[in-house]
Length: 241
View (cartoon, rainbow, N blue to C red):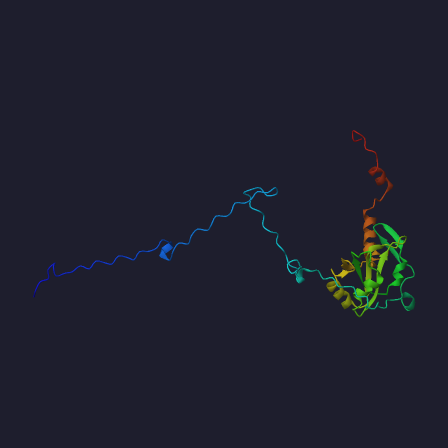
């Protein structure tokens, strides 16, 4: 077997890499740099070298409109809606109401003749935050869709006739009373949302249970003798004598 020598082995040198053009990773020729920006001309309003402000942004009608879910529920006035027929006290001759209503509250007593205008044993709602534009007809139109609706009245000043900002609504059925308290609270009547709560006119009667308890407590807490009153209101001297 013939041995191989150095002369028999030919060394092949690797080919040199092809010349690459200048650029990032040899991907292609380097683009020429952008031309310099022309110098800004100075003016009286804009000094030289100051970047002008961007043009004002223009908003469309869709961008300026509030989403529908954020708009408060305000029913549009309906002039075609008929005014419901309300309760008339003169036609109710079979009631067993007292001829005179004596009221008492906060240490004051008076006679209220307006309670005869309401039906007997009704369920009454106090309606607050009424605007000056709200009247009896507008208040009745808001609650007329309840079957047992009887009467609606806005309380006004005697001398000027200006609204006091509250009124009352009457129902015969307790279910309509509860449904109205839940669904109508916060609704718009006129230009304001209303606030509803149960009327407490029965607690203001002179012989009501609340006034009787308050009267009994005042009798227990009152002084029992004139000697005690004179001691309480006696002048106090400097030395405590």
